[in-house]
Image (cartoon, rainbow, N blue to C red; front, side):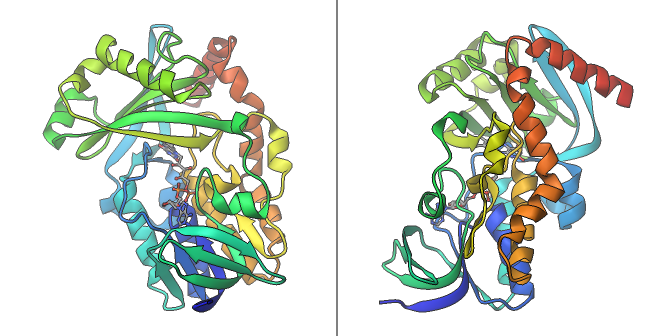
Length: 354
Ligand SMILES: Cc1cc2nc3c(=O)[nH]c(=O)nc-3n(C[C@H](O)[C@H](O)[C@H](O)COP(=O)(O)OP(=O)(O)OC[C@H]3O[C@@H](n4cnc5c(N)ncnc54)[C@H](O)[C@@H]3O)c2cc1C
């Protein structure tokens, strides 16, 4: 039995889903947004660039740390790279909660604290069945359910596993005093050593306000990655600051697209769209996806309002398509054998920019 009907159903209330719901809610579109996980700290470094702050009006209290520098190490060669303009670190628990509340301030948006377990295609609509036994009919279905995406599997096909990088890591809760003592001010750290990172990728250490997020991401397999990260923490001098802390382990996938043809695949159809990680919209070099998820969410909402979901393709390609194509074309060079060369070029460009 269908319990309710909505114009739009959004599966996933992460940054992509909430930003899409905000746009629809402002125009009074009857939308349902489903997510079983809130409040939650999504496994994520939480690094955002200045565009997120400027374009999405992020309140200052959510910005846990200003990031002016990246301390990067490659082949035991350490550099301090200037980030200009500054980036910021957020907690995904408070950041995502804030975005969801903004969406729910609009009365036409309804939140279901439920997991969507099943998606069935009708002639002109979709039926969503949830973990609480609810059946909801929606005319338009939006997959904002991250990676791997149930919606993507039903409306199109999954992201091929070769484009999914495994990330594993730890969140170390600790006092702000300790962070200020043990870490350089306004800096985050990245380690590209092949000794610790088995197959193209890096280890990051991102101090937040009262926790330290440490992880490793690569196209290698999960089990080996955990061993590599543990080895880094116990042997590398940078790991000394973490050894005495107790961390909560996490593992998660992140789309890492290394063939640009992937981005020619459709992200929308007549009555469906995919946004954020479900669409594969993550910058392939480094794995930053928050901005693209938020921007994509907004653009997808605009396409719904403009009455043609196919427009979403045009909108995202225009706004950030070049960046994703560039990343896909260059990511293997950046992490591969000639990576050191590309890294030096990047350093040089950075130096000139300064
Ligand atoms: C370890 C790690 C570190 C990262 N660090 C950074 C970083 O520092 N900066 C950056 O910009 N990006 C980073 N990223 C990428 C970034 O986290 C993602 O690109 C971004 O969160 C994508 O947002 P989203 O809304 O598409 O998906 P998500 O944030 O993953 O949200 C998806 C939501 O959908 C919900 N969901 C899933 N399935 C269902 C279902 N069946 N029913 C209902 N709800 C469902 C989930 O509970 C979740 O809340 C990192 C990723 C990882 C894995």
